[in-house]
Length: 236
Image (cartoon, rainbow, N blue to C red):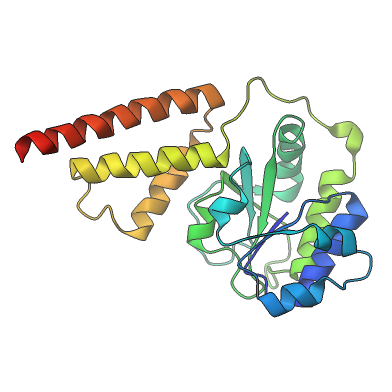
């Protein structure tokens, strides 16, 4: 479980308590409000989870060793650029993946949820079906509902797929190298914008590369970057 920009100690504590209830032990927090994070460590029944919680400055660092990254969203009126699964449909996919690789489930801040930049690190998004008049849920409650769905039927664990999926760190290296190549080629003129970088990151993650394919693609991109740099040197 990855909590991004959490601000309320009660919500952090409730999320950790839910993890303890359903047998999940690895909590990661990204840029939390320090006072809230330290205060949450006293949550009843969640002490072991919070004591071992890992703190990161960025989402990229928090999900680097994960080969599946799923963001949660209330949808609302946002123009989302990812495919979206309802919780009951997404849970089996996550259960199948964790049989062979690490998966990160991201939850955003209580007030704003996940930002577009946060979501660009996700392979797809998942939402809890609620009534239209009140789509958002309390952070701790949302974590509990998701974990219940993931753990309620252990016999339903799907068989892992063939091959090993590329990790988020490998996907990010491909993204960064591709952006370098694009900048060197001059395409497009506005390729330094945050929205363009996020679009490239989403594209790479939609490829769902296997580990071997990711290494192969990264090697090709690095060769292109090297060649482009040599061309620039010869022109100078």
